[in-house]
Image (cartoon, rainbow, N blue to C red; front, side):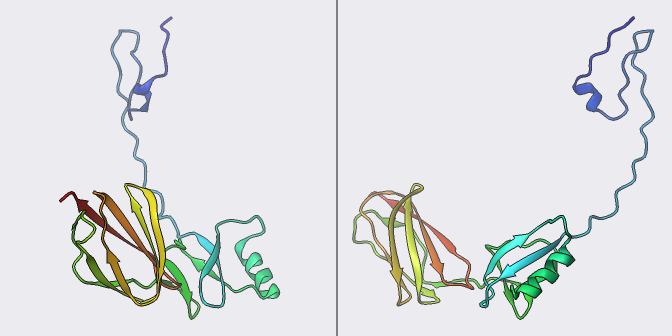
Length: 182
């Protein structure tokens, strides 16, 4: 009796182990029909009065329609939505899921000399935002900006990431700046 071991070869379509004569026999590949296109998942998107998405429910035992009815009875703002929702990039406006607004930045984004004097000057809209700076992935500075002016100068070379985080409904923006030794 010939022993057969299940190994990676079994993962190859049409593979058959060696027959009695020591030769592998190939099975005719079977035709597999493509499954019907997957329907978009139905989710419940909870949000506050400003449209900020606070939760996305993907699945519940009682069913989405029943949960939606219960939320409505409790006065919880929500919408029943067909599709996926990324709460970092979307919000609810007038009962619809829409992309968050983009931060606009003007000025030249460039590398700076790490001399403490070479000043990178940018203008940000909206004018009010939180700015966080990381050096090679480590948080080194954070501040609140209210006048739309983003100024950056350092005396330590390295790869800096500046995160511009305005209030809802804007999405956060990341700027990468290289500080080069003079």
